[in-house]
Amino acid sequence: MTEVRDWSLGQWVLRAVVLLGPVVGVLAAVRAGGTPPWWLVLLVLALGAGFALYPDSAVGTVALVAVLVWWGIGPTDPLHPAALVAAAALLGSHLAATVAAYAPGAAPPDPATLRRWAVRGVAVFPAALVAWAMAGAAVDGAEPPGLWAAGLAGVLVAILAADLLFGRSQES
Image (cartoon, rainbow, N blue to C red; front, side):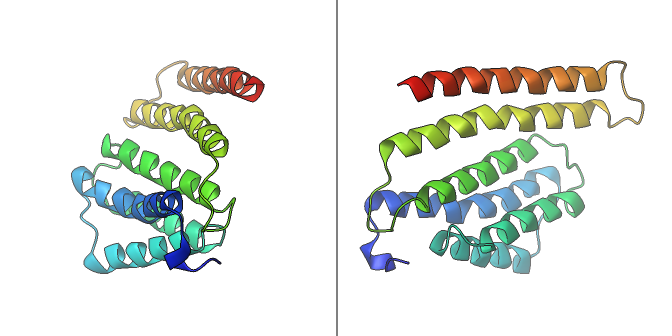
C-alpha cells in the first residue's frame, strides 16, 4: 500500500467515494423510517475507512453487507425510494474501490479505466430499478400476472443496453 500522504488527487477522490458510499447507504434508511443506531453508523464509517485504505480487501464486502443487512431489518418501509439512493451509493463505492485498486495510490486513475467502470455502473444500476419495481409490485402478496416475465424482460433490456454500450466503448 502506498502511503496515504502520497496518494494522487484522483486517488483521494476515489477513496472518498469508497468511504462515503456505505455511510450514505446506511443513512439513506432514515428516509425510509429506519434511523440506524449511532454505533452502526460508526461501524459502517470505520469499515468504509478500511475499505478506502484497502480497496481490494474483504473489508469492503463487510461494509457493503452491513448496509444491506440494516436495510433488511431497520427501515419500516424498505421499498421507499431511498433504497435506490442506497443502491447507487453502494454501487458507486464498489466501482470507485475497483478503480482505486487498479494502480498504486501515488498514480492517478487511468481515465479510460475510470470511464469504462462508470459505464458499467450506469449499465448495472437498472437492475436495481427492476428489482425495486418488482418488489413493490409484489408487496401486496398477490403477484400481478406476468410480473416475473416483465422483470425478466427488464433485465434482458438492461443486458442488451449494456452490451450496446460496452460494444461501443470497447471499439473506441
